Length: 273
Image 1: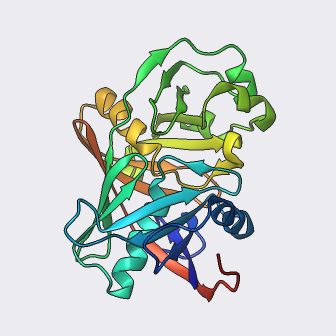
Image 2: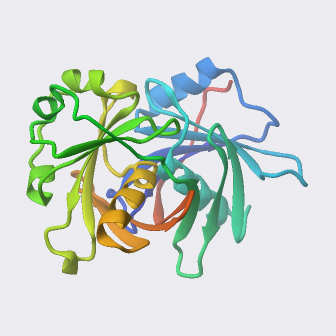
C-alpha cells in the first residue's frame, strides 16, 4: 500500500510537523499491533490510518492516530495531513468528515490550498501549578490549566516568548506531570511578526520529547489566548526547531484550526497486515 509523509501546518517542505498517512482500502482497521509497529517504523510523532466508510453515514472515513509508542485520542496535524492527501488525490472535495475516538471531525479545503479542521474545544480548568513542573521544564510557570479528556495535557503559562523559547526540559521528569504532555505558552513578543502567541509541546509520555507543531494543543491554546486577548481569531506559532503556524478561530465548543500541508515522500509499504 502507498504511504506518504506529509509536512503539516506549513507551506514548505522540511518544516512544520511531518506525519505518516496510510489510506486503507478495507472496511476496517488491521490489527492494533500491526498499526503500532508501522508507526514505530515510520518513527514520526504521528502516523494516521484511514479507511472509507459506507455512504450515507455521519462520516466519510474512519481515522486513527499512533505515535511510535501509543495510540492517541486526538491529533490535529495528522488529520490535516490525511485531508491534504485525500484532496490532492482527488478522492475528496470540499469538506471531508472523519470518525475518530474524539467524535466526528471535519476538514474543509479552501481555494488558496489551506485546510480548516473543526475540532472540539478543550475545556480548560485552572489547577495549582504542580510541584516540580517548573524545574522539569526549565522555566518559571505562572499558571497551569488542565485541558480535559481529549488531549489530556497540562497547559502552562510562562512570562514571555523568550522564556518559552529558552526551555530545556528534563523529559524523564516531565512524564509525571500530565496524561499526555505539557504545552508551554506565552504571548508573542511582537504581534507584528504575524502571530499572537507562542507555544512548545512536550509529550514524553507517548514517546515524543518535543512535537514540532501540535494541532490538538491549539484547541486549548485558542480559548486560553482568546480570553486574554479579546479576539476569537488568532495565530499561534509553535516555536520548535521546525516551527509552524496555526490559525485558530474559537466558536464556542468548537475550535477551527487552519493551516497548509506539503507531501514530501510518496512511497510503498511492503509489509502487509
